Length: 488
Image 1: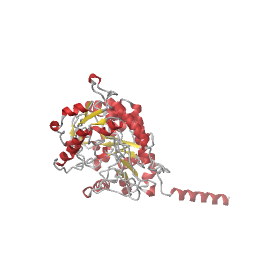
Image 2: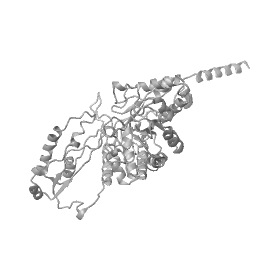
Image 3: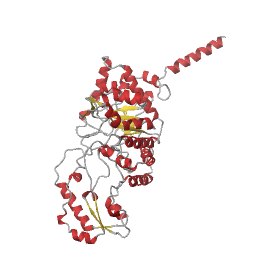
Image 4: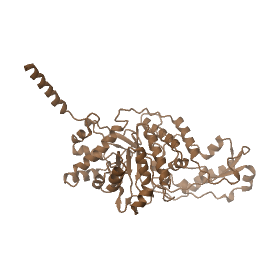
């Protein structure tokens, strides 16, 4: 009997000792991990770190070293609770990270996939799914947990500087194609961030723009693509937009984030802000915006003060922390995946070419001009963008790719002879016209001149000789409506 009591006592002691151990994410229930967190630790979870965004004016939180150089940001780690830092990176046309790193001569190039408008022009969800799978493969191989894409806002105005990131002016097409992209990316075990939720349909004054409309208009046109994607693909995260809706910032609207997104549509993931989006951290927390990116010290101070003063309940803090921890549990980094930084870029180039071809739209084919006949050999190429163009967008839409095949290169590769006299004229004109452009203070200044210069005056070109020396002429045109402010 005495021996039995001794064994029982030992067992009880062991149980007490084990239960007193610090909970670990993935080992213990999420609620137990949350209960073990201090307020400061909870705030570190709710507010991200800067990644490649550095500014003294907007000092950011940052408890972890930059895990993937050039990535847009990270979520902070809490090692004692088994919570790792996770990485989020741009973008809509392919992963955006730095191609070079200290201590190695290796380049970390990514594929520049066709823009989203091209994808919707294919009307082919299977093909778009393949593009998404290839994109997600690069995301995983390079050690990123979430791709900050795709975006599915409506093409309301052709001057919107982010239309290249969006799919269509049609809600159904936008939703279906975007859902295929999300499913493709996430088939690799990495996440997406569906954005910009919601009604982010212009870049002009985007952080103060107030979109005014009726619930029916919003639901039938502007929210419908998001609804389709959430119900058919369940993106890991959703990113709120910069703008206001009927006078209130989207990241501060509980009707959008909690009532519609979560309760009506059944969204199960994490909600984050666009970079430095919103105005009031407390209102963002209350609305259901879980994560503030890339995180500001002022936001942390505001939230801590609100909690200590009783203006923000711990229940809301814990709810949002729970959503973030549920996301972390799914990430490759939490599961111990080690990036090899070696995606199959050659295979992805083939998929990209196929998608680009299928996404091309022929509006009219007068006299069956296309395809170009087999007897055509000499080509006169007009248009400044035939010789100098950006392969993709700027900002978060940019990709550090290994190479670009220009229109001229493509024609040469196909066996055509390019009119060198005309080519020389354009190549001399473009730098001269660029140098004459007014200097811009925009962060995208390096991209602007080549798009804003006028077309070359052809009065000095011997058009009769050009016509005589060539079998056919090709003229390319491009429009430009830029992104003028920082954001994802």
